[in-house]
Amino acid sequence: MERDRYAKHYEHILQNFPEKVCLKLDVLAEQFGLQNYVVAIALGKLVEHGFVERRRAGCYQLTKTGVKAKRTGALALVSSHASIRQIPADNFNQRFWSCMRMSGSFTAHEITMVVNWPIRHPEAAARRYLRHLVEAGYIVEMPKREKSVLGRCYGPKRYRLIKNTGLRAPFYREKLGVVHDPNTKEDVPCAKQA
Image 1 (cartoon, rainbow, N blue to C red):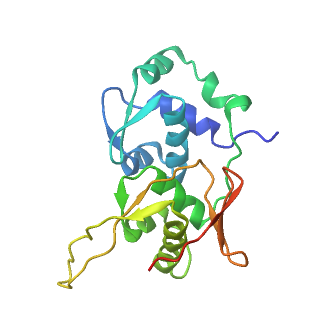
Image 2 (spheres, rainbow, N blue to C red):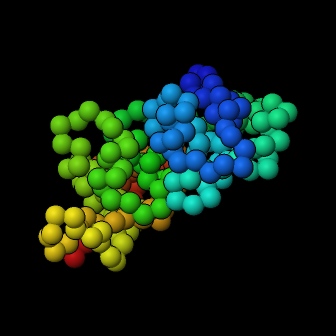
């Protein structure tokens, strides 16, 4: 079995995470000199094991268990092979999914800025991915849009993830017209929105 390539980041982040301070993802990425998506994956694992908690949208803090593990160096749960799931491929949709899992409500633009993936039209790709996830029931559109900064009638749509099935990003299977979820190994039909 391949060693988890993020294990060193779990340990590094936990050992150097300040106590009794709530920090945002971008601040942590800058503090540790890592890319946002790497910190997002590491935080997801630390949250899963109860070492870190999300105090409010996008803000992370050590739990009592995390403080104890930091002081004693008890990181066996995080870095053992038994508890590590298969790490997903690194692509636009995977980074987008990882960021959505840690966000409250969000716009396509907000997540696209965090993802920072070099594709030609990232916001169009984000909207297409969001449309498929809405049709499959993974996310919902919020009833109110953002206020427009350019004086238009409407601002961008806001979304919220409601079906968080795991670490790996669901993907659209065009020939079948379904979203395949690698976490549950199921195909979810896409119901076209009216």
